[in-house]
Image 1 (cartoon, rainbow, N blue to C red):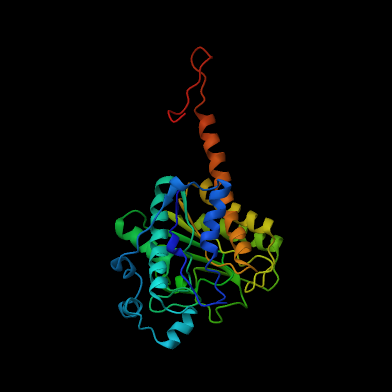
Image 2: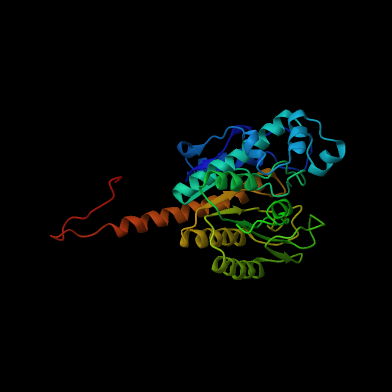
Amino acid sequence: MRYAYHTDYFAPLPPRHPFPMAKYPLVHRQLLGEGVLRAKDVLVPDEAPAGDLALVHAPGYLQKLVSGSLEAAEIRRIGVPWSAALWRRSKLAVQGTVEAARAALEDGLAGNLAGGTHHAFADHGEGFCVLNDVAVAIRVLQREGRAARALVIDLDVHQGNGTASIFQNDPDVFTFSMHGERNYPTRKMRSCLDVGLGDGVGDDEYLDLLARHLAEILRNFTPDIVFYLAGVDPACGDRYGRLALSDEGIRMRDRHVLEACLGRRLPAVITLAGGYAATPERTAELHSIVFREAATLLCAARREMIAAVDIPSVHGTDTLRPSSE
């Protein structure tokens, strides 16, 4: 599976800052070490072009980001201090999702080892999110004629308020957010479908709701591409989550979403979104689950493809196999 990653996804933050910036290199290192991802499959993004960012974000907001002239209140709203490194990593992460989306349209499945910054609105950032990578990727694909209709499956524990706002009047983009009803943000925007969860919801209730709602969405909306925000802050013990999914619950959640997409031959893009476990290492472990599931499903699909072309010859002794073998 091709995936986007850049070493500059990591940008320094002040000491004891709550955002686990270290998770990005940790996830990459872990998945490479396990052989889940391969170095030769990495898509190394450049910074997203200004024209692409302008497909979503307001000129005045972008100019403040370029010049580093955000007001103190705007920086507090984002939750991370502006720096040249942070601005660069924000643009790299956006382009990572764009590149992963292009790869998914070709291969069926791809990922970005960052992204899912769903609290970024057109004209401001919020909740550790500077730019809305998924929104920019959708607009780029639409402009290029690669995909007209998109489905956003947002399973971060916090509502994807920025994404919902950006696409609120666009019938070609379906936004689905399943999140903690009493959690951040206090003021929710309106997604195409919002499923608010009570505190303490565990595996069984969560997975049942996901299965029922996702099946209904896919019966009524046929996208050209799916963006999966695989946030791991619904996991039990997350500092900001308030839900109680086990590691197995996270795995089953990810597998269900990916099987739903692959089973319908819908290209899917995985982004990390949020996760605030006790340590960056624990957060990285949780983020790795979705990529392990993706690798397992892709291996199974490849075996099925090989079996399908293992057709006995006329004499019943030889088989036809793909030329790659």
